[in-house]
Image (tube, rainbow, N blue to C red; front, side, top):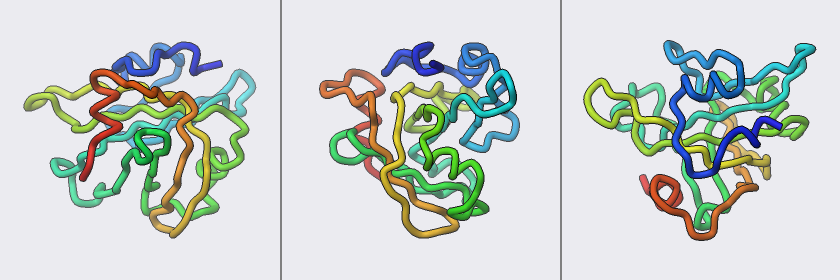
Length: 159
């Protein structure tokens, strides 16, 4: 299982994640969601890469993503081009493969220094509403009751 290669609360760069899952995660044109193919072409996992505070990101990316219920749930907004029937959302919804959440509060640690993402664990689709963007509530399967460091910061972040 892909999730066993990561530790909840640890930070990973896109390059680290690519190396660990043995699949290139595009940092030049990031989509925020990557479907990791399996050995015979069917997906073996989905990776969500999320930046919570989007004030320094272009206006088109003003999605509102955040943890609630103290970190037990995560609300995520898809890209506007995705409707409820988008193939990648169907993969997430069915739960046929594991879905893993990586978050960071801000994109940059300093000018031109990209901040790594913190592995927040596996997530499972709970429900969805609206469209373009689709808003999805996930259950955080690897919730940490007493988080430390960046995971604590993510759980408590507010817009």
